[in-house]
Amino acid sequence: MTFAPQKHGFVRLVDFKIGGMIDAFECGNHAVVDGKVEVLRLNIYLSCDGAFVTIWIGLIEPMIAEARFELPGAAGALDFQQIYSETLFRGYLETDADAAVVLRALRIDAASMDLPQVLLGAPRDLRCERV
Image (cartoon, rainbow, N blue to C red; front, top):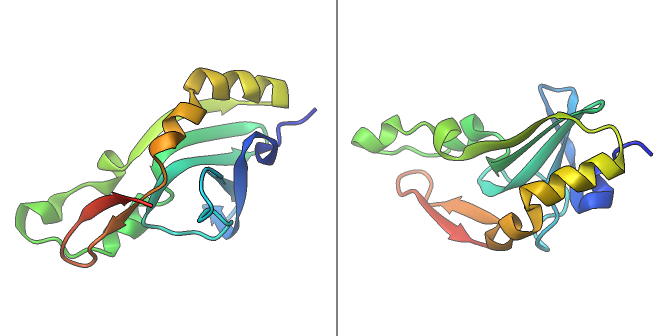
């Protein structure tokens, strides 16, 4: 059976595709995860380009989130991509059985317990709080 992220607790993001073409999903670990994109929310995300899957923890799109803040001085040099995005997996998941093994190995259930979180304080005061 072909890998279906929804069967593993991910919610498809409507009206959002990475690069305009690649489906994106968010870990459905909280009621606020409803398929709508919140660029300041940190969570576990997954993109699917056919069987090629990327799973990361952080922001859905760090550059867009970074643009929401006007941080003064040295804080203005923060690299949101480096700070708020960590790739957990990149590779091919062709079946739900393959995905179950990878997701279990990544300990997605445990990692998502402290998520989602949200960046607040735009545009001048950056802080991260649990939803």
